[in-house]
Length: 419
Image 1 (cartoon, rainbow, N blue to C red):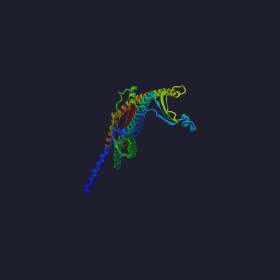
Image 2 (cartoon, rainbow, N blue to C red):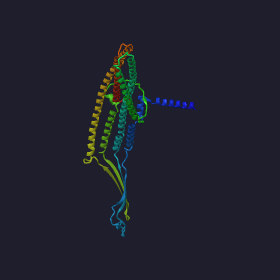
Image 3 (cartoon, rainbow, N blue to C red):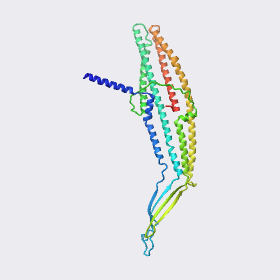
Image 4 (cartoon, rainbow, N blue to C red):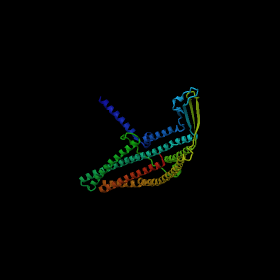
């Protein structure tokens, strides 16, 4: 029985381990989940579907009108009947119907206008998705940097613990001074305090990513700490690059197209429309059946009735001008930001390489030589602590520089709309 219990516990532990491993997500998997399930994107899908469905009815005609009632009937009901001398009665009962026949050019213009609206929303959906990608990347890389800082802090805590224990042992044996001992004890407290802050920040990043993935905000998962620094040196930051890449510019292009089709619909409102009316009358008191058949024409081009349409056309022309200027503004700002960011990235890469190839290795060797001297009683604890403190601060500064580089990369990818 005990053996069976141990087996069950082992199986549960194996299952839990498998689940925990499955919860490690890389950046691509997070971005794919966001693309599939984020409710804001589904909202855009619903808006797009709504516009497409509305466009299907753009070529509908107006409903026919049917009327029924008395026509030219005298109030004196005695006159309705046939007279004694054979005279027919007066009054009729009429049934009539009429139909306005819309102008074909107006129907086609309305259809093109309504069909051009959903592509704008499709591009705006891509804009929203690009912003979500950028937010997810920022949180992901910040989480990754925090994990790297925690590794450094764990290593440094062990080094300071070694110094503290060594100092305590030497002080008991009368071989060392206590001057740097309390400084090292305080350093351990600062390291632990920093770890608490960083662990809290990890929870914040986890909540932010869970929110973007539309999951339980407290769902636990881990991230992959591998990353890549991309090379943007071959990208030309001219207007063509942004016109082809950015969805907000494409959305404005579609807005200009919508505006053009809207102008056409306003122009077609000035075209005449025709209608037909038919009425059948049943006569009273032997009065023969009669009918009416009339054609109708609507003349919206009259000076007093066309003012609103002509004003709308002029308004839409200026709106198109505004869209064009907005488009140029976005291209100009994006080109400036991308160019500036590319210079900053190139400079930051050089700084990081100096940290990796020169500064940190030199400080690590300095610490190692101080540690060796301390173990051989040729160096004091405060000198070893000073070497460690310099190395620790420089390593954390290197990680901060790496974080800045990754955030610059995220920002440039956002500007260029790269997933």
